[in-house]
Amino acid sequence: MSPDSTPTLRPNYDVLAIRRDFPILAREVFGKPLVYLDTGASAQKPRQVIRAMTEVMEETYSNVHRGVHFLSQACTDQFEAARETVARFINAPEADEIVWTRGATEALNLVAATWGRANVGPGDRIVISTLEHHSNIVPWQFLRDETGAELAVIPVDDAGEVDLDAYAALLGDGRTKLVSVTHVSNSIGTVLPIREMARMAHEKGALFMVDGCQAAPHMAVDVQELDVDFYCFSGHKTYGPTGIGALWGRKALLDTMPPYQGGGEMIAHVTFEKSTFKAAPHKFEAGTPAIVEAVGLGAALDYIEAVGRDAILAHETDVAEYARERLAAVPGVRIVGHARERGAIVSFTMDQAHPHDIGTIIDRAGVAVRAGHHCAFPVMERFDVGATARASFGLYNMKSEVDRLVEALDEVAEIFGR
Ligand code: 7TS
Image (cartoon, rainbow, N blue to C red; front, side, top):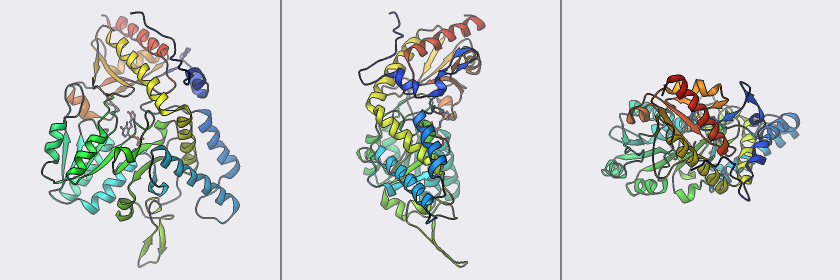
């Protein structure tokens, strides 16, 4: 089959117009047009986000929630409007259920530290999966070590799908207090059956948290339809800035959770004897927040919605599936992860070369992929690879860029000998 390297131009999906919104995509690397296939690590930023952040700093910037003056009010309105945008983006019932965090990592740590310490004790169990990023492993290890709880792991099969029978068995005895899993695996692309898994957890009285880092930028997320209890994601992976992310939690849960950090913004009243705290979400947001970044994230989510999440998913799936097909045909390439439901991530190894060598050589051809363990050591161990090369796709990628990747891999094969 001759590869079709033309961009996927659907009636409502003009990838070339989208690319023009991302200034960095026009640059060259080592004299070659940049092919950015590392959106899973961090997404590039459209002008709309850059402009929204610049405008805040040029026109309305001030600290939020503190001043009576014009700018403080204006900036607070923008900051809180961004919270509403996040709520709408994941269909949260109320904007007050959105807690600003630095990213998914902080959101996971927040839930482990506040909900966890208040609700988990010896003999209780937290369940995660083999597919987790380290940020959905380590905070639960802290909690386990502090409380004497057990941390159990749902295994995955050779395709990279979670073993639902093993999961059911882990839930069986009713000791599981919380299940926390990724929506989409960052290392091998598996999409987890969140709705089904949340239903199973709830039937056994456990809460359900989702790390939505690799899902929020790529597919429609509806926390009410998924019927989960906590959901989090990072701004920088959703075409927004670094330093900002969001945690959604059911109001009834957030209301009963103790604060995370102490400081300004989160208190109702302070004396040296005792402090009282604001209601959620503010009790979890000590200190001056990432104001400009929150507004930037709001602009990024508006951008994603304007392109259309169903259209993005269809486009990215098309490009990623094309990549799987073309990579599988490269001699010596082994794709890791073959789940039936998969996101826009393709992880692979090559007989001839270490992933770091692959990444370094193709970088010279302008192609940026990530090489390493992807902060998911247990996945590497499960699939018996030390590392993989990973191409991860965003709404701006094209099939012609996959062709560039494959051409660059030919060069790797030449250097290392077939
Ligand atoms: N969870 C998942 C599923 C992730 O992919 C990442 C980052 C995180 C959590 C942590 O996000 P942060 O924004 O708080 O750092 N993943 C990756 C990656 O795949 N390559 O670089 C970072």
